Length: 92
Image (tube, rainbow, N blue to C red):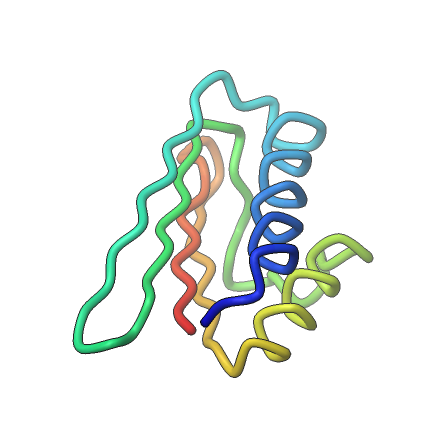
């Protein structure tokens, strides 16, 4: 069973980042389960960033997201490009 509080905080931080830093006007969130693995997909239309240099851009919020995903024994994948928004896929 997932920790609903952790899951909520992950989404809250992603939305906060999209609105505050990414200037997104649209956010899409999708949930699925495949073979017992829960999959979350988060997409926005914000300004994006160079995901090749994501380590240099990680603030406390993204580090908190990584910590929560780790607590859930999950994985986190971040894809973005300048002016292309962000796609985040996390599993647990």
